[in-house]
Length: 312
Length: 259
Image 1 (cartoon, each protein chain N blue to C red):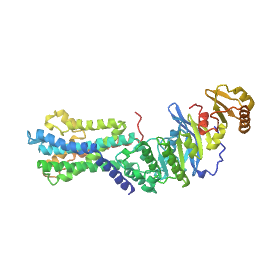
Image 2 (cartoon, helix red, strand yellow):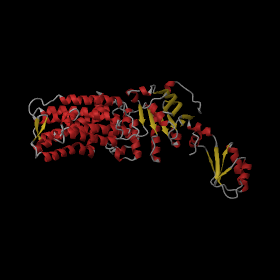
Image 3 (cartoon, rainbow over the protein chains, first blue to last red):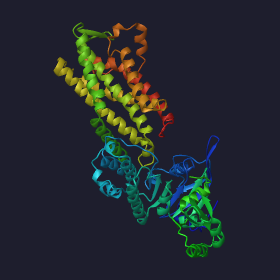
Image 4 (cartoon, rainbow over the protein chains, first blue to last red):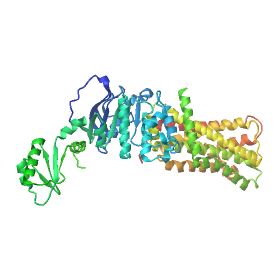
């Protein structure tokens, strides 16, 4: 496990504490010795492929499932024992739930608002999720992405201190996803802590203060997106291969180990700046024109594929 | 107080869905009314009265009492079965479970709603019998019909609730529910006069949950005198309802069932 040396502070600042969490389904170990903490006011991302154990972990935190081993505290309470007062402080967006198609958006949100002691107004909630002009539309007439936003509306209508979002943006188009991110950032600045699962790396990189990557039930990496990317470390350089290009000479002159992969020449860089300077000086001298030249920093995608031991 | 307030809201929410669904209105109201007209026109001309438990009941009263009770059972038993299995299948129940809503509110809202729709059906059926077929109820009958409706809604919805663990999909619920009610109706003096059935079947059906309340309803509507209230349906349906409720309590689940 790659822990980025997160310093433990006063435990009261943690809204979620997970230590040694293990969950089995028969012989299948869905979650294995998972530990992490979520601080007050942060967006914490739980990343992993389908079946990595994200939803199982989240459902244990939400109180839907019991752990086989380990200690779990959510807002200082064991979720299995969390009663109405505890649920009043928590908002949920489950992976899939459906609503009665014959009710309108605002009727559905109003019903849920009634369950909570300090709800937001229906109008405010709908404005936050961008459904104001769909308030009077029946759920059955909404698109998939709009229904997902109703899900989110029901998650936030109770003014939760802690919000669980299980793959909330599945089915969103890119612009809806951007709006959704802005909304979550707004909730965070208003003090809401958020636990988010996603398989969109871009989403995690954009939103999450800290990230834990799950693979086959274990946390294989944890840290900020920047620190995780630093783990992957290597910058790559690549350009198009053209007939007659002497790649061996390039490698020798620049001190870079180039490889030809199909139509592309690429290499990982060590001392990025000096290696690039040598390479560019050499091609300039020789009058070589490099097509499609790019220097690429690793993304969270690369880290993810790296630590989950898989190719896309 | 909060429990009552939330239950009323839940019932209102269900009623809104009811009024917006053609299916519930057709099966819940138009079908019993249609059956009333149909059976009365088939048998009404042939038989002035039909004997039930040693009393001769006018044919229109026989069908009004029987088909009203059939409608109450169809609504409550099938209604709660379809509602709960469907809400569970869609993850709706699970979603409710994650809110501070007290767990009993969902059920209370469902039963309240079924009670309102059952009363509505009874009013429609009695109005059709009165204005269409000149059936007039004895004064005491209203109280009896009301009490039997309360009894029926509770017992039938408890029975539907008990089945929710066995029936895992709304598709299954939508066929098992009405099928059960129709079969029971055939042996319980709803569609057919009891004297057409063999004695052993009559004896058997008197222990089932529909026949006692059907015959009591028919007596209350047709016969003058007394309170119109019988003890037998309260005992038989009370037992069916109580046992069902205990089973439901033991087996109930909020989580979608894997097929």
